[in-house]
Amino acid sequence: MPRARKGAARTQARRKLLREARGFYGTKSRHKQQAKVAMMRAKRYAWRDRRARKRDFRALWITRITAACRMRGTRYSLFINGLQRAGVLLNRKMLSLIAIEDPKTFDALVDVAKKNTTATAAAA
Image (cartoon, rainbow, N blue to C red; front, top):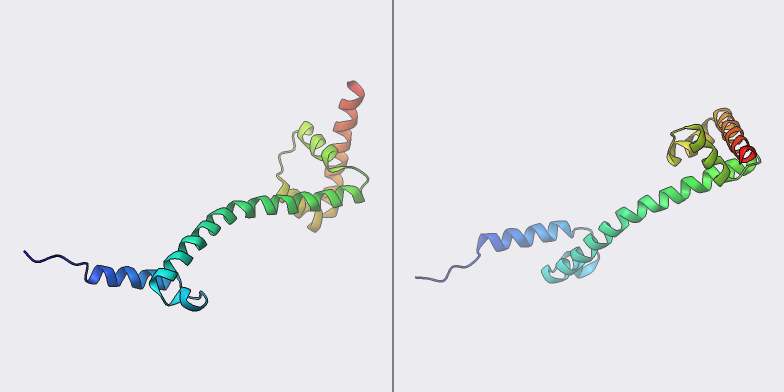
């Protein structure tokens, strides 16, 4: 019985790999082995950076909220604590958007937060 070889499947696998590596520099987009190594690395970094992106955006939102709070004479931690005690369920992304696009609403949120932090601080 003759030995079975991959034949068309091998060609299709190579084509798929090189299609994925399109746009890479030099041999990483042209040679199978180099493309394979580059794709493994790219996928690993993509997996890691999808998680890092979430951290980066949260840090950006917190920085924006902090700046908006300081302009209104309060601290970020007191603002967030006051909102939580008041039962305001807005995430940091929405708070940063409100701070940028609707300052009057953010002023109202700061007032709500201040009332709830001072009331609880005086009671304690």
